[in-house]
Image (cartoon, rainbow, N blue to C red; front, top):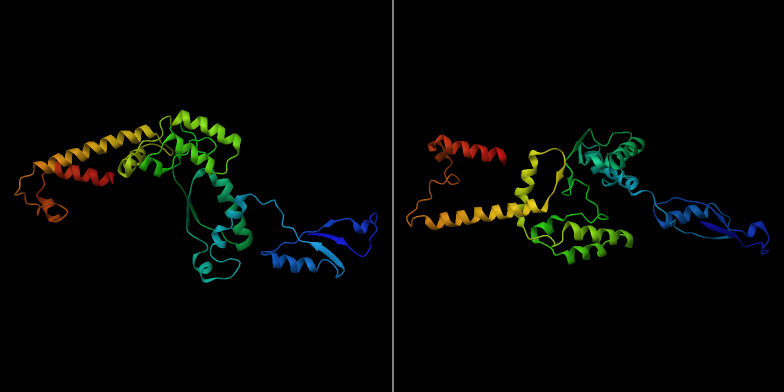
Length: 266
């Protein structure tokens, strides 16, 4: 708050100079009531919200309990805090997880969770972390539905990147996706992501690899389409495994092995 003493009108008087004081509150009205207690009745003041903010990770560190109604003592807070497990990426261990632990211990006197599960990180084809400023972020919907290079550029302008970073990202998009991203569909994307499970922690997502699995899925579709066309008109589907699980007992060992491997993969 900025205050000015209106009793003395001398411009050179120190009382006429602005003085800043700080008040903290959850609402404007709460801050106003606190500010009134800091000055006398003859003093006018202007209440101005500070334009600066804390690092976003500090506000995010309140999530384990603020999302449950804190600072009020709610039923959800009693039931769900502390939690048991947190799933996140290793890249924000310090930025988010450490802050949640510190803030929870300070305000709630408890750890927010007992176990932290770190999942794999999806990176670009070169193994670099995906970043909007780099222009290498891939939206799964763009892989499923396809997107032109022009529309990829348009997404950059719809964000909140500075002009300098937009120019850099445009060049990187031209280099990484010169013809945009072709339509691959959901099955090809799912199959492609499944194949990455056999590698290490990080997934270096290569669009060309997903396109290859789109072609593979297309071959499977054509093969089944051909198979269905060759079935005799009197074909009896009552022994299909989905309709009659007991039918599996009559399979030979090769069929059982194939189904076993399929089940393990899924």
